[in-house]
Length: 466
Image (cartoon, rainbow, N blue to C red; front, side, top):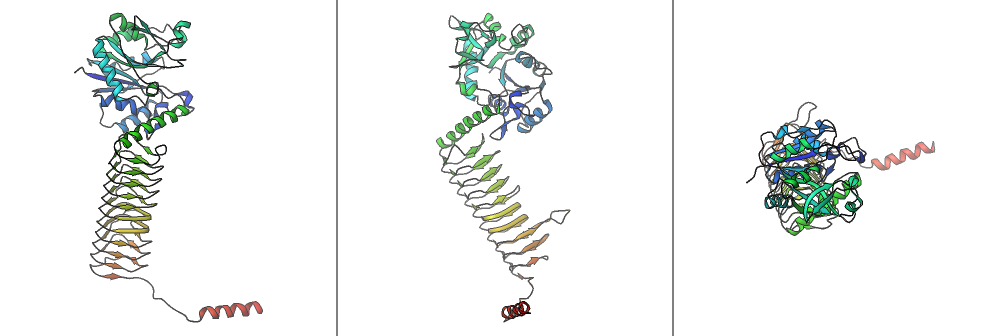
C-alpha cells in the first residue's frame, strides 16, 4: 500500500466571519471546523498529518493538539497569505523524507466524507498519474475554478476571474481536494508562478502540470459535501447538515430520536439500540450510551457513560459521570465529574453529585448535594441532605456504609463515617462518626407552649387600643 501523508490548510484568517477568532477554530457540534478534515485524514491511515497554520498559529495548534493528542501531527507555518500553493509548500520540510502520496485538504471544509476520499485514492490508482482530484457540479458556479477537459480528460483548472466567457459556462468545478505523488508535488510547487488576476500562487496550477505528464484522476462529489465555511451563516448551515447526517445514522442503527432537528449529537458518540432521545438533547465529547436508555428533553451529557436500561429524566446534566444499569436520574439532576453510580441508583430532582461513588439501589430523591462521598448499597438519603466536604482549604471524604438512612435536612460534616445500617435523624448535623446500627440525632428539644397564639393576639389588640 502506498504511504499516505496529509496536508490540511488551516492558515486563513476568515475575515468574513467577522470574528477575532481564526476561522478554523469556530465550532461545529462541539469541535472546531478543522477537526473534521483532520479526522478524515487520520481515518484513512495517514502516517503524517501536517496542519498548515498562519493566522493565530499558536491558538490553532493548541486546539488541534487538544483534539488529537496522540495523532502523528507535524505543524507547518505559512508566514504570509500568498495563496494555496504557497501554503502547501510550507509543509515541505515537515514531510521531508515522505515517499508516497500527499492528500491535500482544507481546514474549512467539514462535511467531506471518508468514503469520498477513499474514492479519490482509488481514482488515483486507476489513473496511474501524478495527481487525482475531487470535482463537483454546480448550477451556479460563480466564484469557483472550472475543470477544463479536453477529449473528456481533465487538462487544467481555470479560476473564475481568469475564465473566458466560454469557460465560465462550465459547471464542473474544482473542490480543491487532491491526492498527489510527493515526488511530483514538491518539484511542481517550485515552478508555480503568480501569473493570474489575484497575483497568488495557485495550487490549481498543479492539475495542468500533472496532465502534461499523464492522466489526472477525478472523482465527482456532492456540492454539499465539498462546501466550505466563509461566514457564520454558512457555519450554521454546515452544522445542520452534519447534525442531520449523524442523527440519521443513529436512527438507522436502531436509536429513536423524537425530534432530529433539535438533537445535538457529536460525531463519534456511541448509542445502543432501542435508546430513546428526547427533544433538545445534547450528547457530547465521547459520551457512550447503552441499550434501552431513555434521555429526556433538554438533558446534556458530556464525556459520560450510561449503562443499559437507565432513565434520564428531562433537563439533567451529566459531566464525566459513569452511570450503571437501570438507574433513574432527574429531572433536573446534575452529575459532576467523578460521579460513579452502581446499578438501580435513583437520583431525583435537584440532586447534585461530585466525586461521589454510590452503591447499588441507593436513593437520593430530592434537593441533595453529595460531594466527595463513598455511599454504600441500599442507602436512603433524605431531602435537603448535604455533605459538607470543603473546609475552606481542603476537600474531605464522607463515607456511608450499606443500608444507611439519612433523615431530611441533615448535614454530614466531613471527614465523617456512618457505619452499616446507621440512622441519622432529620435535621441532624453529623460531626462525629456514627457506629454501625446506631442512631445519631443532634436536634434541640422541641418546646410546645399551649395557648401562646391566643395570648399573642390579645397583647397585640391591647397595644392597638392603647
